[in-house]
Image 1 (cartoon, one colour):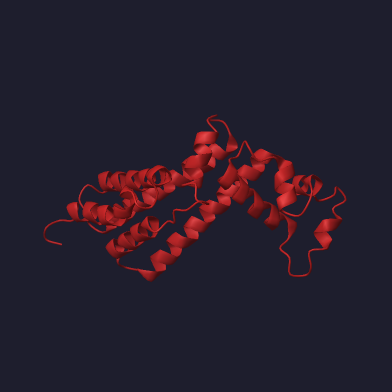
Image 2 (cartoon, rainbow, N blue to C red):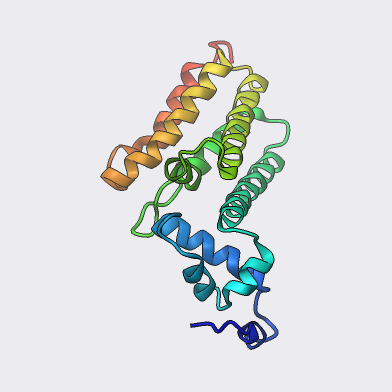
Length: 204
């Protein structure tokens, strides 16, 4: 177990990640795997190869650490969206379909626990918890981004379609936890395409 001296931070070698990065990585993995309330600050510090003193030097509280973990997940999704946008520049329908394929390709396994944002929302019912704002803003923004693509692609009822696609993707992650990768989630990509086709004007 790491001592309270902080010396262990200096014996990781020149190639080791900085303490803040190690703390975030460990916290994300533990919160996702075991649950926010189950994981203690001591457990995070030990997994990161550091100590509580160093952890609190970078994050004032466990709540702040939870918030930053979710922000990091949100930034990763934003980078994936931007990459997809670059690959399909000027082709909104192709961009939409590519993003839906990306969503449908999430892995299901013993280490997977569905959507990190949905999990956190369930575990943090207090509407005033600082993480709730990150969750709501991220989910709302991605729903709006999908709706924007639906409009740019000239699809019928773009807001309705965005809600259908969004809810289907959200539900798939929950269903996968109960029924596994061989359940209805196997047909997620097919269902996404069917919804888009149903909203595509006949002259397109």
